[in-house]
Image (cartoon, rainbow, N blue to C red):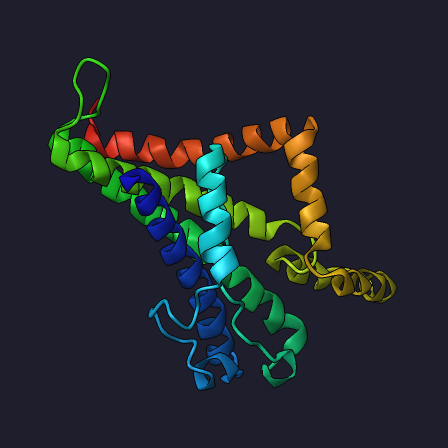
Length: 226
């Protein structure tokens, strides 16, 4: 149970940072909507979505799936940005980039934990007081890499869709934007595809490939001369 609580805490913290990054970037680029609505805060209360931040992560934890979730999206008004066509994709990209930065920070923290307590193995388990720290840092890497990759998918209404829009020709852009009216149905369809078809194997391989450099960095920090 402690492990599940840690995973949910790390997830909630990560999605809050993700949304904060959207709001902060929008504010710096001319749209203060998120700040004016009280969303430029790390206080979890304005951000938590009962379903996406608590219920879904709990269900995924008990089924052994990769932890995934979301917070309430921060409000952004593209027309208030200095240059909506160029700035809106920047606001969208800020969320996934913040998760990659968090993954890097967790990598450094895990590397420090390895340095002080050693790399746990079957023969040399970690000291009791450090087990939860190892779990927190490792989960922090995995969750944030997954969040970054997931949100960069060009599926409306995910961040990747708003980034892709910037590079589409006008006619294709207008057709593509029409997909946003389906809301999260496209995302749900993709998740079902991942869960019940061979696409899931590709996604798992891609995620593990993206996670590997972060863990490699942690091991290097623990023994840079090794």
